[in-house]
Image (cartoon, rainbow, N blue to C red):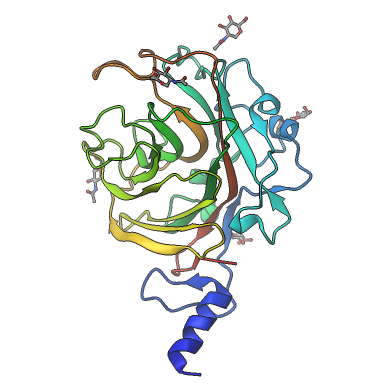
Length: 306
Ligand SMILES: *[C@@H]1O[C@H](CO)[C@@H](O)[C@H](O)[C@H]1NC(C)=O
Ligand SMILES: *[C@@H]1O[C@H](CO)[C@@H](O)[C@H](O)[C@H]1NC(C)=O
Ligand SMILES: *[C@@H]1O[C@H](CO)[C@@H](O)[C@H](O)[C@H]1NC(C)=O
Ligand SMILES: *[C@@H]1O[C@H](CO)[C@@H](O)[C@H](O)[C@H]1NC(C)=O
Ligand SMILES: *[C@@H]1O[C@H](CO)[C@@H](O)[C@H](O)[C@H]1NC(C)=O
């Protein structure tokens, strides 16, 4: 076999590659900093316990429990749940999904349910997920029985500053609340990777159609020191492929990874979306997530396939 074919075969088998210069690490699995994949035996009520790998208290509706919010629909495992005896979970929102931050007012403009790592990974010593270079993994798919309303802007995944004033990256779907913020979005039913949220416009690094009933797999490699973002994507069980970057993104701010649904209101530009705008009532919406984990990519290690 030609050596190039051998190398390609090797990369496919090992499923690992470097961000740069592209040399795979023989036999090395990238060190996992946060394991967000849940065991097959995990129940929705387990997410309400303080033993959950996700925060059991927020961010969800003030009067809701995770036992009410989380579902386990019968779908094929996601790529990175295939060999780990772990399963996907669905995060839902309904009319009660109104979050009240500690000491704050009810955020009646939003409907939101998001899982955050239970541990503050930004102050977690050598396991910090906001130092060096780290890669955030997740897979997401729609649930035809709980469709989103793409007339609204949604945030299924993001990484929010420690002081909540911005986000280093946000995955968005639906009609942008402000086209000035996201002028490159032409298809509402799409998934987009947006960079630093406090920029207007945000930089859209990647977008893809949010087709139903297939896993959309993402990995974002964040250079916390060199201020870079690198985007990998695939569908189904295909290996992740580089689709954007490494590109500049100001990654200051620390903070935490959010996985779930934040639904923005509709309404005129200039309203305070936390407290104002329109939300239709009677909603029952959800997104299914799998293969959530964060790995250390300091040495260029990124998991691209099994
Ligand atoms: C965790 O929950 C258990 C049972 O509800 C309780 O006894 C324990 O004090 C809690 N631990 C912490 C650290 O909150
Ligand atoms: C939660 O329930 C309390 C008591 O019924 C109510 O006063 C409050 O408005 C509810 N919160 C939300 C966000 O619906
Ligand atoms: C962090 O350091 C501890 C103690 O040296 C070690 O056991 C652990 O594996 C390290 N974690 C990472 C992610 O390097
Ligand atoms: C979707 O959202 C728009 C804008 O808020 C609203 O007018 C419409 O009624 C919603 N559609 C459904 C099916 O709820
Ligand atoms: C990133 O943004 C922070 C806060 O606005 C600023 O202080 C810093 O200079 C920026 N870094 C780069 C590399 O642009």
